[in-house]
Length: 168
Image 1 (cartoon, rainbow, N blue to C red):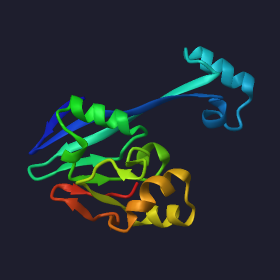
Image 2: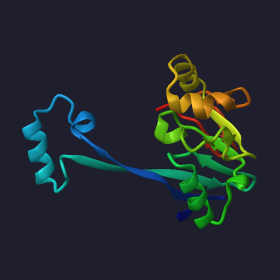
Image 3: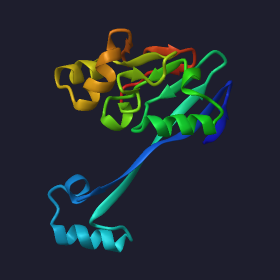
């Protein structure tokens, strides 16, 4: 965990998970000649047959709240990362989803139970409209069970004093 002060806020980055995938050309080289992909990978000292990725969660401590932005991929990893920063999942007062790709929402629930039991869930209404009409496994397992009690926001809405949503 790494923390910086930003006015009255403390912003901490947490490791939300990591993974290794085979066949990176399917993600990072769509339409590229396989020989060219292999050469560019080799020239940049990275493998052409696998790709690693990681996800960083952002935790913001305000004077009145503990806000987690996104939930990463692994609930157990989140718990360990929060503990390294001196917190528990129960300490989190708000969970804000920036969007609903699996690497942002998979840590929200485990076995049908919310991993942040005291947190208000907040997410963009447009994201929820899309994913509820086109549900992924991750959305169905993690967001749908909590969506009815969530606060849905739009660009420009204030999440908490000093934190405002901006569409990207």
